[in-house]
Length: 302
Image 1 (cartoon, rainbow, N blue to C red):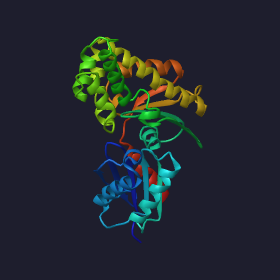
Image 2 (image 1 turned 180 degrees about the horizontal axis):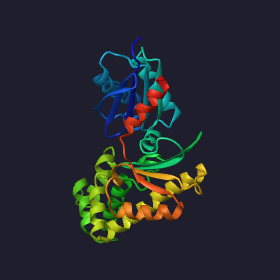
Image 3 (image 1 turned 135 degrees about the vertical axis):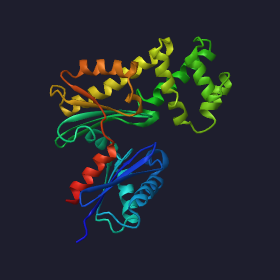
């Protein structure tokens, strides 16, 4: 009997990562194109996932395919991905798709209660304790993503609008936004925001510089970062409350590009979270989430 092939996938808006094993023995990790169904559509995301997996296993169909996908918290998205992946891998017995927050948590906290805060282009908090699974935030740049890289970048764009209205003073933060958008006056700023689809990635890309400006004491950037820390800590607190973990001294994982390095944001956030959730232990993400996805796949295969 051939050893079963298990494949785990972490599909996000930046890239897709896949890992596979044969009979529980790790083989390799591969990477492919972004696969966020919320921004690219379900079919596009499924194709990106399938291409990444095929690049690893070739013509073989895995016994189990487990996918953690951004945006898969919505049932319509999740079911659409499952159907499309079943069609792409007709010999696969089990295709499981869940929101990517779960693999982000289990990459650092393999089992037991825990909370993960993901702050990258968007933002979301996820808490799990037994069968209780709580997701807070992650509503996208129009409805939510408070404290995210996009929110930080867009706060600088708002500050630029105030400068052009005569309600604010130009500084390196607003000059950064003006250069990124090619906006030299109020009219060109409005055109950059409203005349074409909003470039979420470009605005989110302002965040690292704003964190650096805040670290040097820039007043506008510091105020933006302080607001982001408050918003992100509110996500964690809400998730802890809803999961009943406020008094359980949970492990809280900081994940995502914004929290990868030490900064004023991470310092303020850690201070707020430790005050909000007494006795919690804060950890940075230690392992790639795709490896947690592979463990889920292997467990299902066994």
